[in-house]
Image 1 (cartoon, each protein chain N blue to C red):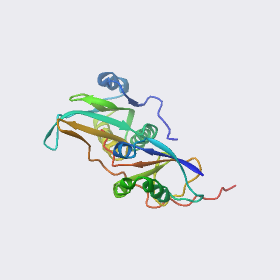
Image 2: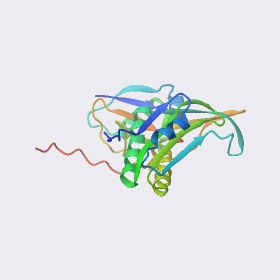
Image 3: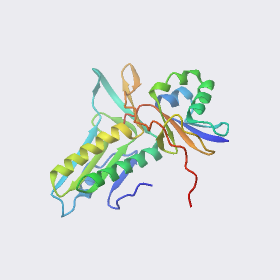
Image 4: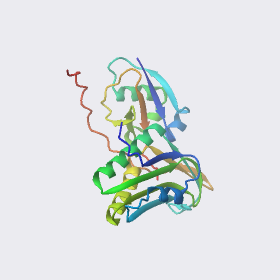
Length: 159
Length: 81
């Protein structure tokens, strides 16, 4: 299990994401910066007008991977709190699909960690979106996560 | 032994199911399991180059051996965010 910082908020939801509330939750008096990323539903894709999106996830694994991302940015940037919430189900144009907020004493760490979190999420978290158009629907082009080339054979139990 | 196989996105649509329990021989690898699942659904096989496998919620190589009760996902390219 990935250790979870007790003040972090890592969630998958089917409800509307409360962006302002989440951003407020990561802020403490010791912070000079809160960087946020609001991923929202765009009204076009590859030149076609999008009507709406549907998201689905391998939820247990997605949450585990999101917790790994939070642990990674805590380990690599001088940040305080992380909130990362992804929504599933049908989302309309303009709605938030993912919201990330990172607090830090200084802005560089907050920006860099927030950028790292969304970039890593898009490469490694098992969530999929289907784009609906007037004349049909397609699963969005995605990224194939990197996989270890070989998994070492299980070691015999040592004493 | 048996393992649980999960399908998502276009694979779920293709398979017509989100999960199934599959019987495999002792010592079977992830790729053996995929071959087994694709035998029942030939369309599945052609997606192999654009899939990654997960075993018990971790990405793993196709050459990974299975254990009884494993949860295996064959995952299309991810597109969250």
